[in-house]
Structures are given as structure tokens and as C-alpha cells.
Length: 436
Image: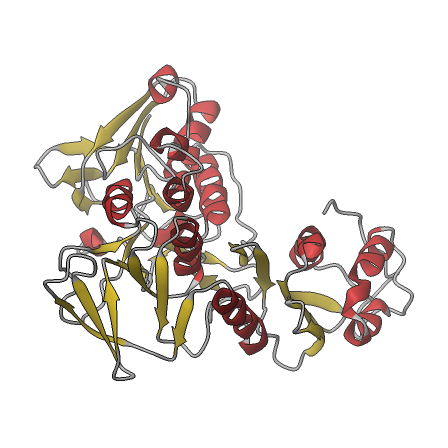
């Protein structure tokens, strides 16, 4: 059996290792697009921060890890896939045959379409090569403009702040992390950043970047508010796009990402997909979606590999979950943080102390949540939302007093809901305990 794993990020590495565990005799080839050892992109901000060296970004630290497992590791980019002959053609012209293929090609950063986006000193923060260039310029006191304050941008913000840069953040959305938090939480995050000396411009767009003759700030960033921001470094964090263009003509169906079934199989026989390049089920909605976070990629890689190896393992769905540390302020969101249609909400806010807890319910189940400055709740929220625990009478208590979450969690984990079954429920209202 010839297994080929196209992609060497968290999904690809997990898949290759899982395949080896499931089949000791198979030939396994893993192909990475960069001339690097397989590494975690999410570790790059820690490299910028100075907490780790480059080796610390590697997904596996032991020398010879892949060869010791009998996994052949190659570098290269795929040109196309012939699903009829089960052949992968690389850009250099080499062909690789497969019996089972996993596509785990991840995503690439979107380069905004404004003049100057490709000038020297303008970089994305997506690869180790990007990090090396950023480290040359992100000196203490250097003026830096960060374009984008979504989840990835906010992680980069933390690293640049730690390096002592004079930081300006430009975000086109009306608030920071707009796809993760509501106006209250996003507003808290903005105020927190400003209190730390970071300039945050929301509802603002970069119009252009131009070169100057100023050695301290060789770039001017033109903004939609009519002002300019000087910069020695501009970091682009304007979102990502799945790496699927090489699939044209392959009979593998693609929407925003690769379409897969509940076994992570694509529309082509013997071909599977995992990670940031595929649309798998969002646990909260039951619908296909792109959940580009590392725990989901690892989960996809494991499940896809098991199915490739003949161990039938359906994918139940992944929880949309983000946890962010912004200069010491922890924020998080889970599941349907925007709320469910016809659902109910409980929230408590302490603006002065940067604390916020918002719980979203559908019937007597918690389906989403947001937290700012309240780290003790992360495990409990994940447990309640991911398992779909029925809260019974605790739902109304939490709507009135969300701060009683710990009390509610302990009660429902013990099967005590203090209320009748939700409408439409049958049988006793008993929950099975779950670890936080």
C-alpha cells in the first residue's frame, strides 16, 4: 500500500504518524512545500517574541523522527493530481503514484490589493522565512504597522509588542477580532491595547504603501482616514486562503475549501483532505465550514488517516474555539458565540476590570460563549458546549447569573439539573460526566 500525504503541517504530520501506527508495512511519503523541517505556524509568534529558537517551532523535536518511522519526507509543490491514474505530478515534473492520498496543503496568506503591498519591508507572518525577515526589522522602538487585527493578527501583535516596537494596528472591521468576538469583547480588547501604548485604528483601511528616504521609517502607510503612518516594517495579517488551485481539473470538488464527507473523503476515490484546506463539519452548526485552527487540523489528520488505513472512523464535527493572549489579557470564544436563532443569552460585564462573560443557549443547551479576562472558565465552557449537556433549570439561572457557571458545571456533571427536561425531551434528564 502506497500512502502519500501532501502537506507537512500539523494535519499532515499527524496523518503520516497515524498511518504508520495503523499499517507497519505500508510505504508512506510526506511532502512539504517549504525547505524546512515540518513546523507549526502557530509557534512563529513565540519565535518573534524570543521565547523559542527556530528549532522550537518544529512539530517533532527528535532528530531523524520521520525516517525512524519509515516515513519518506520530500520537499516540493504539487502541479496537479490525476485521480483516474492515482498520480500526483510535482511542479518539477516528477510523478508520484498513490493508493491513498491525503491533501493537507493548508492555506496561504492573502496579500491585499493596494499599491506597495510588495515593497521591501512589507511582509506576511506565515512562514519561518517571513519570521527571519521580520526579526531583522522589528527592533525596539522601530515604527511598525500591523495590517489586520483578526485572530492571527492579534497573535502577531503580542509578539511585536513584546519586542518593544512602536506599534500601529490598522483593522478594516469595526472592532478587533470581529470573527471571534462581539462589540463588547472587541471593544475591551481595543481599550486594553491602547492602555498599553498600542495605536489601534478600527474601521480603517490601508490605501497604499509608499517608500521614503527616511532610514528610520522608510515606508509611509496611507490610510482611509486621510492620515499616514510611518513604518520601518509593515506586517500583513489580512486573512488566509486555502491552497487548492492545483486541484483544477482533478474531479475533486472544491468550494471555499475541499469538500469532504463525514469520513473526510473527497469526491475522488482514494483521496482525502484535512486541515485548513478542507471544509469539514462544524460541530455547532452541523454544516461544512473552514475552522482554521491547529487542534482541528490535528484532529482531521488523525481521523482521515484512520479511514485511509481502513479503520472506519466518522468525523463527528469540530468545535470552533479560539483562545487569545493579548499582552496578558486572555480572551476566548466557543461554538456559536454570535448566538443561535431564537436562542437566549446571559452576560455579565465589568468594563473597568476588563472582564466579560457571555453565554449563548439554544433550548437548555449551551451552544456558544465568549470570555474576556476570565481564564478559569475555558475548560468548563468547552466541555458544556462540545458535549451538548442539557442544563435543565440551570439555563435560566445562568441567564440571570452567568458567573455561577462553575456551580452549574459541577451540578450537571453530577447529573443534577434542578429542572424538568427541555421541551421535546423524552426520558429522565440525566447527563454523563465529562472532564473539563
